[in-house]
Image (cartoon, rainbow, N blue to C red):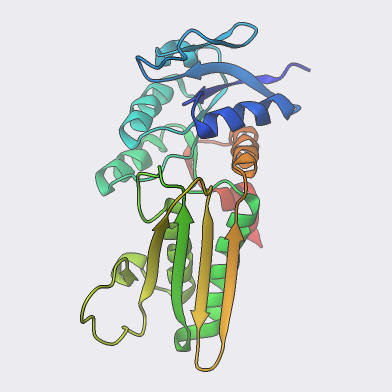
Length: 264
């Protein structure tokens, strides 16, 4: 049985490289197209037989059955508009969308199936699930604080994963993260608001990502921690999502649905 061709957007980036390796190991999927930004020094490079890195999005998508996208928010939306015209399912690992961009993302999901996730790690998505349950079970007597650490080159803060983790806590409490998130503390801040969800950012070195969630009560605390040492598990999760989304109708999906955690 032939393997379904997949377009990798950002094919020569950190994640694109690992996604290509994961595709090479997958029994049902294979690299079918590779896109990079105009002027990239790797343009024209042959990655596999018949697959060269190009800067023409339409050419990269040609003949592919699904696309995996790690790019800037604006570049991602440009690609998704093109995919929507072709009815092409997409897996999106881009973070940092502003509210207007998120609204357009949701509009596009009305035309094609999209898996959009801040983090494709299976363990991280289990962490989201556990965070939601823990917040519901522990209740308002436990304060929630999140600390995230990423490499020095990361351009957005807090990380999309940290924000998703905060959202999971808020969901477990029946709240909206936007109304309770505390992203910075400085000076005379006063006492901590009881329902605050603190998210603090650390940057340095080449760290692929660490996220620690603390539920701090009176005389005790619960810690849930995920640490990454490579990007391989992110890539394997994105490829797993690509295989899953091919069988879905238009809609906006997340990695917890891919893994069946929404039914657990």
